[in-house]
Length: 148
Image 1 (cartoon, rainbow, N blue to C red):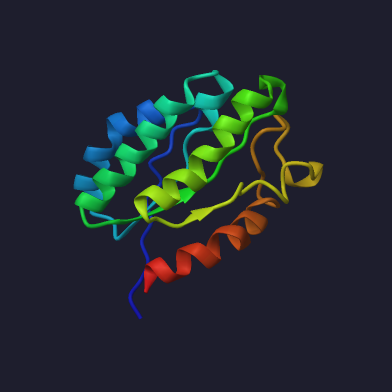
Image 2: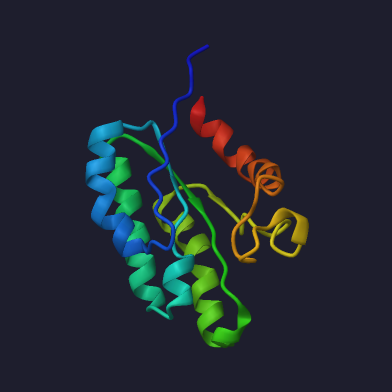
């Protein structure tokens, strides 16, 4: 069995534009077999254009595929106070991209975590160590086939 190495290139508070700006260097440096894309929430919280978010995510996935990596898209959500129209546009980005690019995606990874206070950090936005297993359980069924 081959060892699985992982590299976390995330930056707290980052946007899809930041991820796009760094993706080529990360792909060159790490040469991943699988790229997990977990971006977009901070774009949504800033009210950025859903079209821009979708285009940035699509370009990240495209560059990963060109580099020989399989992409896995982790869906994000934002609070409903941004209005129904915006949140609906935002929520549909991920399943649309998954279909258009032929990549797997995981529905909102925080679904079973975000409303459970014991699984969240004090900021109420990020999971703590108790929330991580629930997230892993949600991601694993889509990730495992990519590792084979």
